[in-house]
Image 1: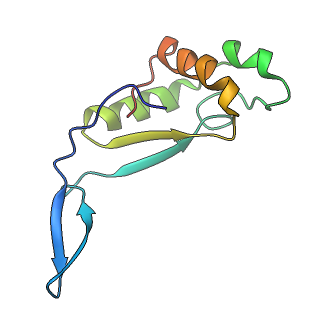
Image 2: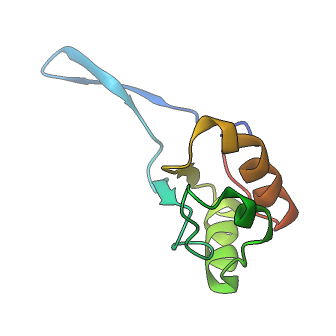
Image 3: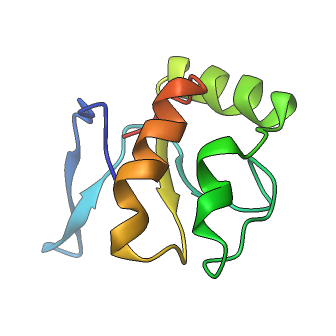
Length: 100
């Protein structure tokens, strides 16, 4: 799921003359955030009708959006199945979550 393209400015890095994976700039963190039970009510896949009306946790919204504005990478991961992607992305947008 993605709604904001990240301008990462990845750094090419070598160790002992050998390339390693590109590195995030100093001070930038990559946060992987679960959805259910972490940023909102815990909604089981067996009850998808509840996903559209889940209540978000205000502190989670404030914290994640602050990290996003500070330049950190915010990525959501979930055990929700692909058929629930649209309702999930809509829910994230309607509740104001910023992410990559």
